[in-house]
Amino acid sequence: MASRRFSIRYHSSVSTLVPSGRHQENDLEQLRVRVIELDGLLGTCSAEIAATRAGLEAFRVAYRQQVGLLHEELDRLEVELAEVELGILKERLGDSAHREPPSAAADRLEAPPRFTTDAIRKLFRDVAKAIHPDLARDQDTRDRRHSLMIEANRAYALGDEAQLRAILQLWERSPEAVAGSDGEAMRLRLERRILQLEEQLESRARDFETLKESSLWKLKAMVEDEAAKGKDLIADMVRRLKRDILVAGNRLDALRG
Image 1: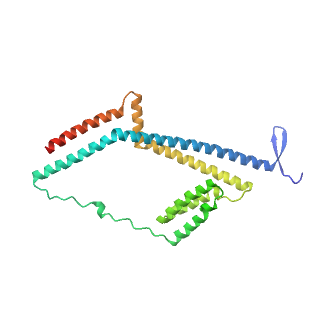
Image 2: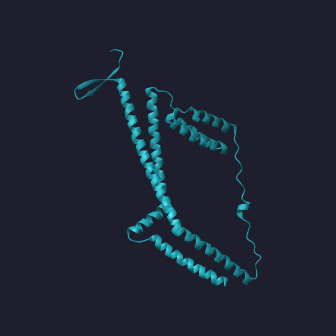
Image 3: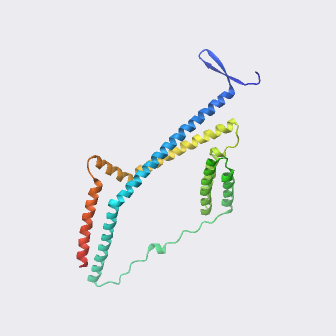
């Protein structure tokens, strides 16, 4: 009996002897349950964001087909109108020798290339040594390491020391970086996984807020609000654009004539 360690839990006036190893098992089980809960929540949030993006993309395609192409046609006509009017003005002034100023893009200097230093090469070797996919214990970890390795290669090619350090620090804080199979190592992996999932949930929340702030989201919301009032905002846009296209076309024909 002396070889077993016990801790005493009190419930009301009754004391119960519980092996201390059971505490660790209970703690690990609670952490596993928390990981499962957060993982499920992350999956739900990711699915909702994916569905929202798909809905926005479908709206974008439909809007372009119904409205966007008409906008492009009107823009084309307005450009042609401007060119014809400019030609008429030059004829009246008798000055057709004006030249456009040289493009600013032609004078723009390219950004100087970034060179890889010895410090960056050493840092890249440290990153590769830590996250190389061949060190993975399972397929999920291998995929994770492979994604990080792609990011590291890109950062190395750009000479981005800050990004390489960020990748290394991210890995060092990850559950996969914890070695060992004892209870303490398992606990640390679970705690890091919980922190990782919470950070990913915060990132998903920021992604969703970014979607809500986009002009496409606001336009879609406006169309849906008007539809709820019995109005077809898209149809109104189409009618106005077709009218403006007709007016611009008639004016262009008159100027050319």
